Length: 82
Image (cartoon, rainbow, N blue to C red; front, side, top):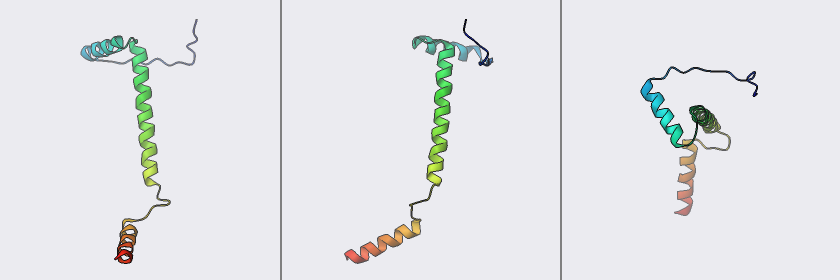
């Protein structure tokens, strides 16, 4: 018998139409509603983590130029090549 000591149960109050759609989609994929929901939750969590890491990477300014510095470097390059 599997141990459920480390598991938590959640009860969802779903509209009947949503429940039926969920059940149908899960069945078409050969999954239970629990399996489908678990995969959906994991995918959503991974998306949230990716988005957070992406925003953090955008905030990392090490090795980057300000717009003003970039435009100034372009002007200097154009003067040298002219």
